[in-house]
Length: 285
Image 1 (cartoon, rainbow, N blue to C red):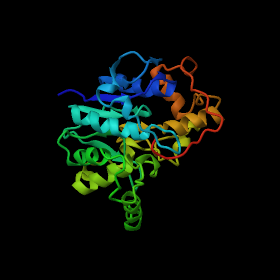
Image 2 (image 1 turned 135 degrees about the vertical axis):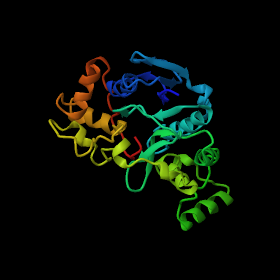
Image 3 (image 1 turned 45 degrees about the horizontal axis):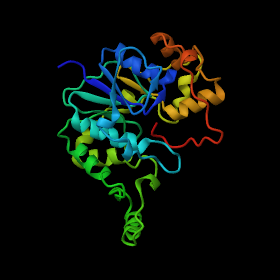
Image 4 (image 1 turned 120 degrees about the horizontal axis):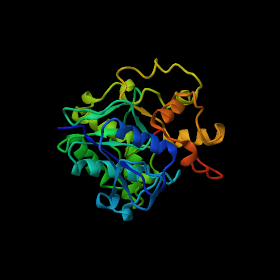
């Protein structure tokens, strides 16, 4: 069996140079890459296959985080359903950069992002994974009560449900269908034992993400011989680039060097302007 197929999702509209970089990195590493989408796309790099996302999850089921408007819930649900239907496929967020080819003999491919959470920004699970079954069951109920919540939190949510006012997933804390659920169910089933150490997929922590833009920084303390992927923390990185870097990374920064390596020109696929009152929060992307 060859390298796994890489699957990603971009709802619609133009891709920026960040998404181009990440998708191209997988193509250059030898992977087949499919980009699922709902509406028309622009700036799609060469070598990327396109597929209709509605075949996995209809847009009528579109879910967003109420406070931020982020489509993270929809993306979480999409990747679980896609993995259920796929073979030899690994999910990758469009802000996951491939440093080395992804290979797995078990179908499991995910890693720790911090001491607390396994992130699903890169996620491979075999179709018969008990954790995947649990994730699908949990996310099937938009008003489900997270089993990892503290007893008092669960009791409060249960009382609201019995009173006829259940709390929707979009009103729960960020990441409830993402890393929080993934970490819980992988631990519950014992599959957390397959998780990579942080340096493999998330060498730069959320707090350290700004180091990827520092000029001439020696990245060897973070990016090691074990590193397969680098998470770019898309929303936060885009905001930082627009607000403080003039829309593109310094050429001699880690991110700038990656763009040069893959021949990506930021001017040809610029970042979108930030909303006037952009709310940037959460650590899932």
